[in-house]
Amino acid sequence: MLENRNILIMGFGVTGKTALKFLKEFPCKIYVYDSNQDLQKLNVEEDFIIFKDEDLDNIDLIVKSPGIYPFHELLEKAREKNIEIISDIELSYRNLKTNNVLAVTGTNGKTTTTTILGDILRRVAKTYVVGNIGRGILEITREAKPEDYVVIEASSFQLENTVDFKPHIAVLTYVTSDHLDWHKTRQNYVDAKFKIFKNQDENDFAILNYEDKDLAEKYNLKAEKYYFSMGKISEKGAYLDQGKIYFNDGEKTEEVLDVKDIKIPGDHNIRNIMAAVIACKLLKIDLDIIKKSIESFTGVEHRIEFVREVDGVKYYNDSKGTNPDSTEVAVAAMDGDVVLIAGGYDKGADFDNLIEKSKDKLKIAILFGQTAEKISNSCKNHGVEFYITEDLKKAVELAKKLAIKGDDVLLSPACASWDMYKSYEVRGQHFKDLVKELM
Image (cartoon, rainbow, N blue to C red; front, side, top):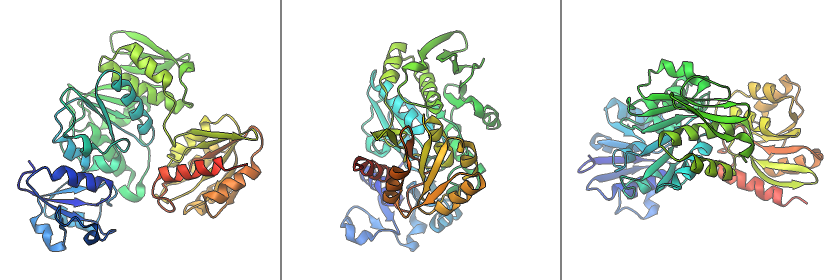
């Protein structure tokens, strides 16, 4: 499949470097393109050929990093020449020895759901958690054995460039608009998300939010469908009823656990847990193992993460809240009045709905970054008091002055970090460091 082919790695960040390491095990010719780095200085000329425009006619396959714009000029030229363009998860899937592949995508909730799934499955078998979290999928592709589980957090960027990818169990937490700067239209974004189900057949399983049932029916999924819902449903899946989660396999219904035993806050996390419960029940995992894992799970770093309490004010790090829907969920999960710190890279999102739905809980919005002015306009439209600061440090200092006992200070930017930070992790860590310095 890869032998004697000319392969171009597009983007030489984390994904590109793991792709190079993986491909070096095959007798193929490897080219690398990255306009943001001087590849000559990396002193790895013996490992690859630095791509030049005239090389495109020789290329058989492109492995595209998620950070490369899908309508990049080079990709458009490659499409004209019918050169196959794939993502790292597609390359990995074609070379994995195991069929025990689970994949999770969604506008929000995918990291938490993937992490919970990984924690449960590790209790019964060797399990790799890869994709946007954990190790890169190409790092474990040759290592994973036929009996092992591979749990993938898959972004729309990765799914867009899949061809044969066929997870045995695919989860879509829920889908709304995001990354419109990237996909151009909401339909393109939704189509990319639903590619997770595209190659599944009647022997596979599709797990979806019941709220997306009508949308799912438009895609004519071949896999056996299971739904999760915050209310009782007759369809196969998991649902919440009178404070307890139940699982229905189509023949019988059984109680799974009481939500009082869940440590992570918010209705969104109940949904994430139900999705993971369905997947594990389909894999015949013992209910006691599922319950023990969920009851001990304390959450994901940078997702509604409690940092500390200062003078009766609680500080939460939700740097992973990179779109308005995610921030809306985080605000709703707070107990007190919310001093919201938001703003960042502009992905083309609309913030009006976020502010309108959250205004009753928002005491003040402190805004920074590229989208500060845009979010402030939404605050004006809905009567929410706001301040604009030059950076996160100033935002935290101002929050300390404005918050009173019983309030919650929440960093949930509703935006990506790329205008000021390398990643949401770096932004979140900076926030935690700033909060820990408060006197």
